[in-house]
Amino acid sequence: MKTQTLLLGQTLRFTGNPLSDPWEDTVRIDSDGAVLIEGAHIKAVGRAGDLRKAHPQATVKDYGDRLICPGFVDAHVHYPQTAIIASWGKRLIDWLNTYTFPEEMRLSDPEYARDIAGRYLDLTLANGTTTVCSFATIAPTSVDAIFEAAAARGQRVVAGKTCMDRNAPDGLRDTAQSAYDDSKALIDRWHDKGRASYAITPRFTPTSTPEQLAALGALWSERPGCLMQTHLSEQVDEIAWVKDLVPHARDYLDTYEEHGLVRDRAVFGHAIHLTPREIDRLADSGASVVHCPTSNTFIGSGLFDMAQIAARRIPIGLATDTGGGSSFSMLRTMAAAYEIGQLRGTPTHAAQLMWLATAGSARSLHLHDKIGTLAEGYEADISILDLASTPAIKQRSENAKNTWAQLFATIMMGDDRAISDVWVNGVRRG
Ligand code: GUN
Ligand code: ZN
Image (cartoon, rainbow, N blue to C red; front, side):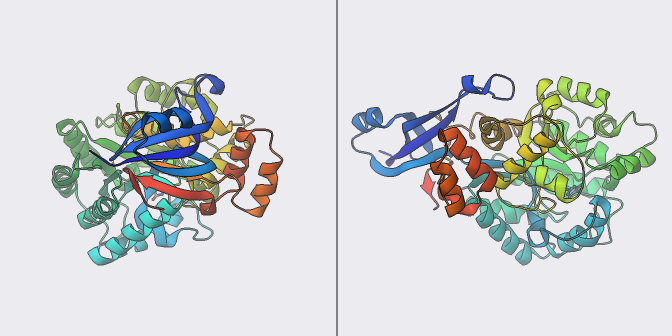
């Protein structure tokens, strides 16, 4: 008999997508809720009294009026950039050359990569994030480092070797052939092993030749169950550069499309400055986009048009984009998404923000049958939120008319102090 633990508290669960249907119809908060964990999975979600009676043998963990939520899913990060987060004053291309590439070079040392991977996962767990989808560096050992660190913590992680064969410094370039060979070997070593899954990872068109994109497109057709992650239309200067590099392309998305990289299971980070054709193509293809709001303001990229993308039913994930983003916290990231929505005149409800940070991100990564929701059969990745974690939030919470208003204050003002506890794969990580 597997161990059973009964978590008591307020529970937040989704029954639908609050970006496409009225939020009230897709989510519920039960003030007297309970989640039964059996081994690594959620066995039942219901009312505290009912589940206590039905499972008297379960160990009870009572969280009082804290909120029991799915663990956060951060759908686009660069774990190797942990140590250069919040570096001052550059825009995308200068930021990459000045801060990012030199730091990513350091991760060619496997020991340093292991150190950063462990540090990164500990920081994100402390912020209630249980799954990330990460770019590694060009070094295959940096992929091993993040998957090994995740396995040691029982975490579900998606990652891939970043491929770059042009416009990157010496020591940080591969080739079309070595990107293909190394990525293939890593897929065979890691994909679908335990909780690891692999994303084929060309960094972006400026750093991958057409030959490299073609090689990775060929690899993806040989290993179609993997994800493919890259960047799309983040900054205006970047888009102009792509136009120079690939003059025959109809637009930025086309530079991927011509190599078979636009389909279901493709995950495009940023996707801010899109043309109507790109939006149509994304909507037809089943590909996902990932909103990275703290990064978009920090690097000065622009205002993601969530309302338009959601209206086209393109799956949207939410992400910190560490270290272009300025925070490891998905609470802070939800706050930034709200602020960008306000600047666009489309405020997002707390239910929609929470969905983006959990089930929506899981959907964008094709993990929506495993994580992101409190429901029977799902993997037991759970975060417990304290809705009165600081004096400032507590006084606001006491003056709130319902739990949604309390949760919104924690989203806007909260940080790692709001994370009371984290469960990963049925194990309490605190
Ligand atoms: N575009 C290509 N590489 C990167 C990166 O590392 N961070 C961000 N924000 N954008 C990119
Ligand atoms: Zn990125």
